[in-house]
Length: 330
Length: 269
Image 1: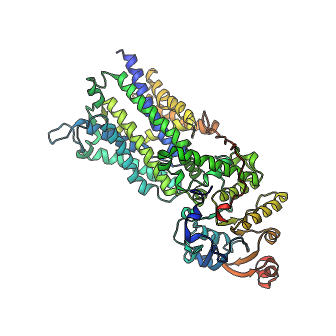
Image 2: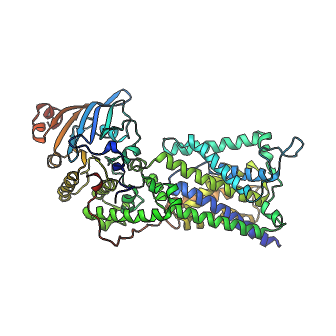
Image 3: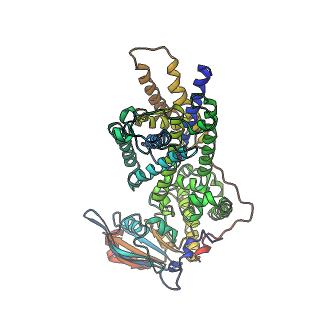
């Protein structure tokens, strides 16, 4: 396989992973108004679990130390990653999503993200410290007698099928009455609650569902790249996904796909091909400037994104209209 | 219709008892820090009755409404819906039992269409839960059709069908008030709490809204309305309660209440 086709395939796998993240965050933020500044933690947790459940047990003599090591067969590895994301979201959601202002919730989630990075980096026996994990393989690949790097096309196909199915599921749920409840909660919490919606429960539901998808996407990524390092899951990664959603169009999944293509893929990949300028690392730093600028320019000139949230027109009922609105209480 | 959507009817404790109040507040108090916003207010509303609350700014009217709806924490007192004590229930459970409200500042769902605003009001029941949506798609589809019919029926009644596909934020102030009221009606309420429903409503529509509310009450609802416009209160309400400094200072029919010297001194002069 040529370098170019490998590169393009890798980019497409990243696109699937980023699209899953963006769909999940869009469901949480664009639909439900939950400002999940800790999103990346749930993806990292899924990635970590997918890694250790395929690496096998870690002993005192192992070159890397970690917990939960085992050899789970396909597809239990990804299921474990999904559950890890869901479980961690549930625990975090129980304290971070209590009845307080949304900006406070966002601050708590950002702090969770910062603390998680510190804990993982500092505690070597738990997650192998800042060295992270390497040698992660792909159980599905072993099944076919191929390693991840030996069969990127196969992995891309596998990731794409999962990605498409999950994204279609997210779209379907968003358009369901449950998704409508989320939008009502986003627009006016007090009114939604006064109409009978259990806000605390709804918020936790969307947080856990989003966390599960984040965990799944993390699992897909780590099994492709074969390594897991806490440094790669910093809080700034959450803002890349947020930028993708804002640029594409909050609440519109087509927009979210466009944003995913533009921000994490094109904006962050094109600079690799530019000639090196200044001191080493300057180009990398400039990438973050580009992401920040994209977000700001979007908020200034196109606050609803490239493809704004779509108006859902009501289908007029065909049968004669009922006119007594309070017959149930008479 | 009815079934899963007519939630209030499912609870025998909130079923209407002839002659008995549909909503009763007993010695309700609300405090903010050291301030007693509501100080021992008792009140009862019977099915079909429209009760108005008037009083100067800061009298505790909206806080009292908040305590009834569950948005504001009570420091003491009891709230009964039918014969059921709802004092400890969160707002969404009170709404599911038929106690619904509008807000002083309009509370339409701004990025949802008027139609969606209305049908969302019925989502609190189990038919819209994540579990029901995933496990019973057929039932969900039927329920959606029933709801659409109901929502259009209510919009027709308020002559708002032409706004069905407009976003909440695209409406005028008066239309937003109507959306709030229509949204409440989707829930098959037993009691409607209205906080200044006429603010922003064009004068020529005020009379129609009064007639509509009276017609809705006649179907067996209890309505409690906080309102500053005395002419509206006179035409809309069967009884009036006057609040000042967190207490009820007078109650009765409109004409006798406004003639009360204490009310004159506290509010009207």
